[in-house]
Image (cartoon, rainbow, N blue to C red; front, side, top):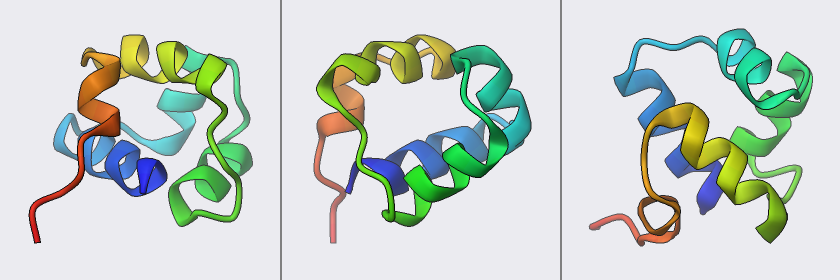
Length: 66
């Protein structure tokens, strides 16, 4: 799930949801919904999240190892 991947990367960079929201133009509540999976990330939004987190879009799309 992309939202979970966003959360993992965000936390690894010691970034708050509010900080990520400021970088992407989303409210903290929207970031929370994305990370919890209650809001989907649209394909056109992936670039914003990748840039804000300093990763490639493909990293957001990669499946996590079980």
